[in-house]
Length: 265
Length: 275
Image: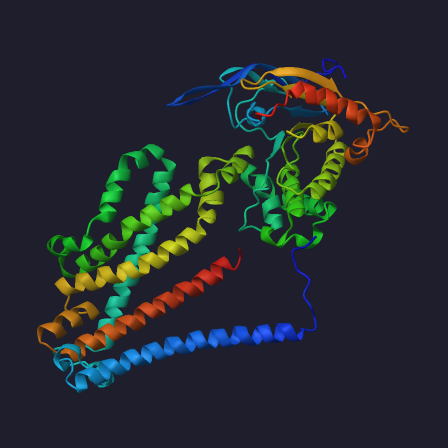
């Protein structure tokens, strides 16, 4: 896909980020440029510690870059933005709130209409199969259910851009595959712009349309790979079906080599 | 995939045996607890009566109830023992409530301004380690007879409350705070929606420590300055060598502490049931 065809919804221009501590400074990102078109589903992979998660914190506005610019819809990011929803590695549901109360947290913080937020959260939770658990506490739910509740919390504020930071890493492998299918389906149906950060090559290939490979620290873009699957309908296969497609292994070995995984990792 | 586990409807014989053994275990623990208490009371009654230890020093358990009844009546010199007890209880409740409120406010301020914490940290630790009872005579001079009791009760429980609650605030999962930040939460929203509700277990733990310490502060304060309260009765009784009075007051203290413990346990299960 030609990313220059449309005005990018998310753009990073020569972004550099350094962390400071008394022991010294760490260069996490260097001259990093990425652009993501509206409605695009992009995956970012890279060796551990390459600054993948840092990248999402920059886009969501909870971190500011040391150099360069981060733009959402052409405007520089100056703090958290309502257009951006961020799903963290674990659900981090508040154990003192019911599932519904957790799902409306974002709306509550942003001062949106609570009646509307409750309606929308209820609809989302019902759609994700949690209709019977609205007034349950998080500890009464399984890991997969909790992560779906976290997705409802992210989508309740109706962000246009969704950032996923290894959203399945805390789950067992079966739940992981099933939930990857579900969440991909939901995000595609809602036509969100999605940036998925993962260390799982298979997850990136099967879920996204384009995979960006990052280098070791200081993180830079190493390469871009468009992912295409030939299907009869022409529609994109579900992640689960994609894993069985003939192209999958080809992409997998290319990306594997790109990552230069070695035993020291 | 719900977490409700598969429960067998018709219990097997193994399960019934297990239940029975479990029940027997619980009964045995209760029985031993009761027996220990009875043995203690029995020794306390018999040893002085047999003149093995001097009854002048220890009184007897059997003397406590008559003493209590006698002290129920107010005399021109001495108010009823219930008035004494009430005075101590009120001072204790005021002491630990004040410690909780002030302690939470101070801890929140330290959380809000990290540099304030960095400056005050060594002073707080030293203030907490100080033997606060050394201040009893000083408080008496500064605050007068009745205020010094509250002052003592607060002083003895405040610093540990601040330290406990602050470390509870620090212990709140940083990722929960990050989550709130992704929605654009302000610092006060992080405090009220994440840090405070996430610290409820810490508040309960602080309350448990606090209630006991406040009672200590009140009693010690009353030793010095009061003409009312259980601490005063203990002091007065020992000065005129009437151990009956001392032991009766101590027994009431045991009952008051147990009731406070029960009240806090009840509060704990009421609050934590939601988690």
